Every structure is written in structure tokens, then in C-alpha cells.
Amino acid sequence: MGDPTGMLSKLHTLLRIMGTLIRHPYSIKRVLPDEESAKSEQDGMEHLTHDEIYDGGYFQYVELTTRQSADVIANSIIETFHPSSVVDVACGTGILLDRLRTKGVQQVKGLEFAKEGLKLCHMRQLEVKKFDVENDHLPQEMGNADVVISMEAGHQLHEESADRYVDLLCQIADVVIFSSATPGQGDRYPRNEQHHQYWIEKFGERGYQIDGETTLQWRTKWQAHGTEPWFYRNAMIFRRDSKSGLDMKA
Image 1: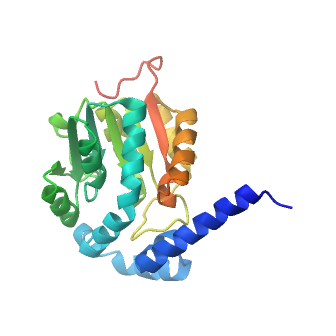
Image 2: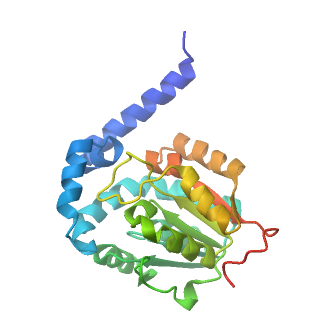
């Protein structure tokens, strides 16, 4: 007979995913992607602008499915790192920054490129600047934070921008809280879905090592508290190795 605890955990996860699909039908693309329909949709988006791809409907979906997860993620960040300053790169609707501010983080700032995402951030009265990760230079005031966050954004960039993206995160803080979609996960328009090792190696080249123990603790906690699967499956915490001699913020 199988482990009843494990079976119950799987059943709970399945029921929660089914509930998400009923409430937000668009999320079926992300949780259970259909390869043929995904390819067809992506082909149709090839010539759209960033704002046409990531429109109001997309950010409404992000807001709805991130609401519960944001509290759990914010608690983990505060309990583990006690930051006084946080920067969120590709911060979307700003919901995580908003939760961090509510829970006492003194300085929260963000970078976001999409017009609809910026609109929601500004409605929350957050300090968020329009920023194109693939082309813009980091504003000086965004550097030297205690923690930098970038979650479920790397796969939306072109692969040739991956090094620039990781460089950017390493310029901001010595602690990076990161996640990005893995192959087959699905999203509105994934350009660079990669296995976790891909990002671990890129951060490692810059003197940032994965904190495996904390990463595992967070993933377990987030799953138990009902965060969306893409967060608890993909979360990775990187810390700059002081022995590496590399200082990306120099």
C-alpha cells in the first residue's frame, strides 16, 4: 500500500489546480499546456508588441493567481533575510512589493516594462520605473538593495538576453530570489524556458551560489501553504560568494 500522506498531498494539489482552472480558465495554459495550441498561439504573437502580448487580461490573471502566493513569499523573505530594501525586477502588478511594504520593509522598488503592469503598480503608489531588461541600463537608485527578486520572468526574455538579465540582478544585491519557467511549463509567450541548472550555472559564473538548504525549505513551505505550483517548483535563492572575488556591483 502506498504512503497515505503522499497520496493526500497529491490529491490536495490536484484539487487546488482544478479549483484554479475553474476560477481562471486561462491558467490551464500555464498548468497543463497543450503543445499544439501553445505553438499556434505563440506563432500568432511573433509580431505583436510587448504591451499587446502582456495586456490587461494577462495582468488580471497574474493578479488573481498571485494574490495568495504573495503573502507566503513575502513572509519567507522577511523571516529569512530581514531586508530594509528590496528591488523586484519585472515586478508585474506590484503585488509582492505591496505585501513586503505592508509587512514593514522600509524601501521597496520595482522595474516593469509592460504598460498594464505599470498602471497597477502606480495604483498601489509603488516606486516602479518603466524598464526594458533587454535594452535599458540599470537606474543608479535601483542598486545596492539588500535583496533583489525576479520571479517567473526569465523565460519571457530572448535567450540571447539571459546573460544581460543575470548580470542585472547581480548588480542590484548580494541575495537573489529567483524563479523561471522550465521546459513545457507554459505561459503567454515563453521564449527561453530552461531547466534550473541553466540558471544555477549562469549565477555561478558570476560568483553567486545557490542556497540549497533555504531553497528546499521555502519550496516545502510554499507548497504546504498553497502557493501556485510555478513558484514552489521553481524558486531558487542565490547568495554572492564572498570568496569568489567577483563583485558584480563594482
